[in-house]
Image (cartoon, rainbow, N blue to C red; front, side):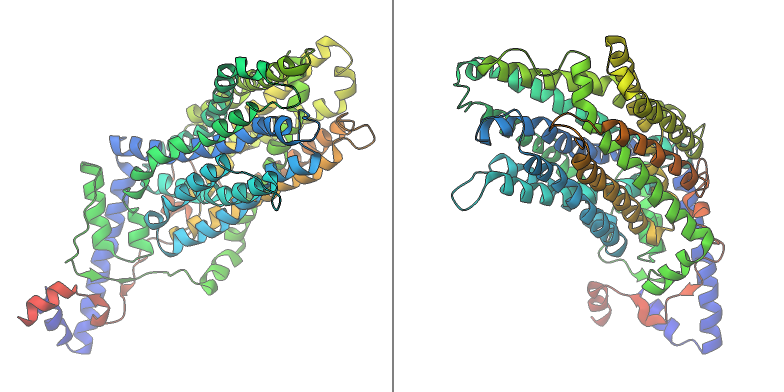
Length: 560
């Protein structure tokens, strides 16, 4: 091989140009052949493995995010002066909003790094951060110089960075390995693990509360010390599934699209495709010659040039704003869960003292199981069944339209529905429908579409930008609307909730228009969706023979 390279250097200029054009044409065809193999492959154990490995991350993410909604009540019992059933407003907001703030940072950072250094190199690092952040929360303490709520805010921000990294990495890895005809279902299955994570948090909370019933009831109401065990167990157990999946994330192969289009190593990518499609493994030969090709490279100038074209820029605008609008309502809807729990019989109990503490914690836990099963999980799997046949865009449009109607009904009819039992039941039904059509609608499709629709060299970065836009909406919902909820009434009165629901309806309406900026992606290859000509994508060999990298061991053999 080294001798062949040496002989190539001896060719005259015209022969080198002719030779390079021939090699480029051959590599361009080889690239398209390898991509065709990936796009047309039948569903295999390797695809299932990718879904499970990526899905465990989202399971862990949702568990950790959702668990704090239950744990904050436990923290209130233990760490407030009057042992109230909730933390003070600012402390409660701090522990809940810290994670979305970290998530926004992680989505932008890991989205960019995955396009810069590789999906494989970053995959697993974000899970380590989640595990460390989760464990740090579970063993947090306080002293004279530091309050435990402050410690938890820091750890939850760190954990949020890891959670943020999971969004672009899992989306891009699952989309780039998937066959065209099952790509939507693979990505939806990964994202749907969120529903199981939320359900698991509610189940674990129910179990630990029930396990400590005798100790909680025996505690003094002014010193419910065993409740301190509950929130630590509830949060700490969230690290277990992540720790189990860590090995598989660290050993998953690099996607062939990254190897071809960003590392510009077509030969290695072709070998990877053959290996993972046949036996699910990959092999990297350290002695192999690396031949770089000329292909579009990710640079700041190229990024601005690509997205500066309206046909490309409008797509990024559409995916980013759709996610932003959706998350304002998706996270804001949690503000009303206490109202719904009260309506279905899982509100604050009549009992007082230690028994009242136990009953309230159990009601919250069991009630959240009901809400998860009643709307969240069915919505994800309805999308799973239809996303590759009906399409992403119709599902997202349908979801935004119905959510506009549902939130308008909940907001404008709020006062009337709260006056009677039948009205409260109707409000509960609408709440569950809102959960259902968020997941059988834009909550799932806003994750799937950005993982498909951008060029490989910007796919992770653009997905991170879209996801970060969503988290900005979540932060606005949790910070802004949490402050507005009791406006015009007593603390805890939720006097302004009806107006918040009306605002949600307005944002859902704007989501309809942003969806119109996005093309349909079903049954189309990632390269077709990139809006770039794939014939002649490889225009030559990078530079001259000095760009053909010969491993040191090969050079040493040649010298000998």
